Length: 302
Image (cartoon, rainbow, N blue to C red):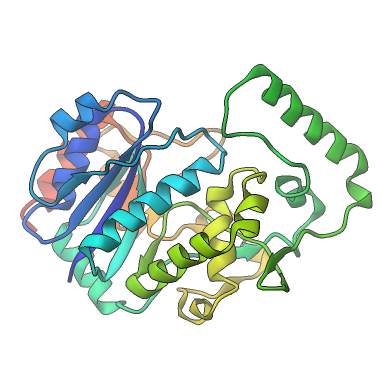
C-alpha cells in the first residue's frame, strides 16, 4: 500500500515540512510538493528534506480562483506518475493535516482500493445563481486592477440578465455534458489519475473553457470524472441537489466555512475534529502547533 500525497504550497515552509514528514513517517508513502512560483522556494528546499519527500521542479504562479491551480495539480500528478504506481493520489492544500495515523489511513485506502474519493453535484441542473461561475468569462490567473474591474463587471452583467441565460454545458468529444462541482481535496486511483492527465493533454478546448471559469479547481476534475467510466467507482456517484452543502460534498478532508475557512489551533479541537470521522482536516498552520502536537501525540506511534 503506497499513497502519493500531492501538496499545493505557497507559504509556511516549516508547516509544509512538518506535514510532509508526518505523512511519510514509518511508511512507504511519498509526498510531492508544488511551490507557487510567486514564492521564494529556498526556504522550502531547506525545510522539506527527507526520504520520500520531493519538491517538484515545475513551478506555476497560482492565483486564487484561477486555472493555474489546475496546471499545478497536473504537474504534481505527472511528477508522481513517473515514480508510481500508487494506490491513491491524494490532493492536499498547504493548510491540511491528518487526524489519523499513517497505518490507519493506509488501512482505510487498502479496504477501498478501487474507490475514487471525489464527490460532485450538477451545476448544470442547479439554480441559476450557480451558473455565475461558468457563463461570464473570468480573468483570475493574473492579479491586476483591470482584471478585477473586468471580473466585477462580468458579475454585474450576469446578475442583470441571468434570466436570459441557458444552463451551462461543456463539450467532451462532441458530446454535450453536464458540469459538476465539489471540493478541491480528493483522492483518485492510479488508473483514474492516468485518465485525467491524458484528458488534460488531449482536450485543449475543454481546458480553454475552464480557463475562464471561477474557481475551476472545484469543477474541472469533477466534470471530467463524473462524465467518465470512473463515475461508477466514485464514493457516492452523482449527489442529488438536496446534498449541495459543505458537509455533504466533503471527501476525506473536513473543514468549516461559516464566512471564512475556520482555522483550528487549540489542542481541545482534536477530539472535536476526530469525532467528525474524516482522516484529514483543514485549516491549520504553524500557528496551530498546540493542536498539531496533540494530534501527533495520539497518532505518531499508532
